[in-house]
Image 1 (cartoon, rainbow, N blue to C red):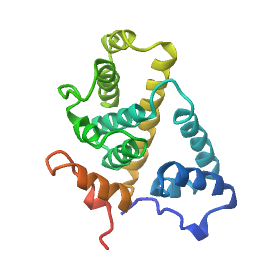
Image 2: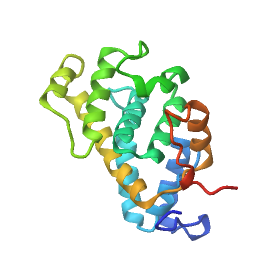
Image 3: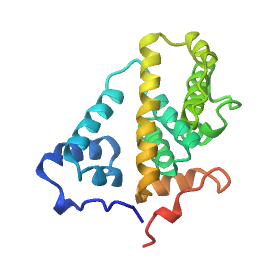
Image 4: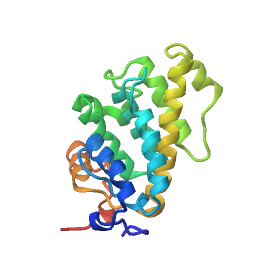
Length: 200
């Protein structure tokens, strides 16, 4: 059970409506994490601003950004964010086979060297303690300019916040990402967070 009760639609303050609509447009549903953040409308508004910049106009493909989010979340152990990011990758056009292979990105032919470099950094940076090294950035140098590296780090850092938010609160996973993750991954690849989802 979520440790801070998400607000219901009827309880939402007026100032949260824009953030709510933004989340629904971006993801196709309203995440429970947003409904919990709504207890502090200023935080929700600030977070909406960060997400809109990171997933807005950029030099890094938004599909890769979702996969970066998936790998950093896997390193942190956040099942909630793994489900959201893999669903999000499919929603922005990443091929389902590639999404399925994300946990094996280092050996899968579906990933190129540039993607592997970004995902290697995401996995290292998502661990506690952080294991990112100069070598990770040297690997990025072959493929990405300074702006692009900044975008990669921004995605990793945003998920650092989200992983801690959702794991600490045991945020209940919504039906759409739960069903997507359960359909995509075998039990040994995916622990879909069933203990965090109300049985209906």
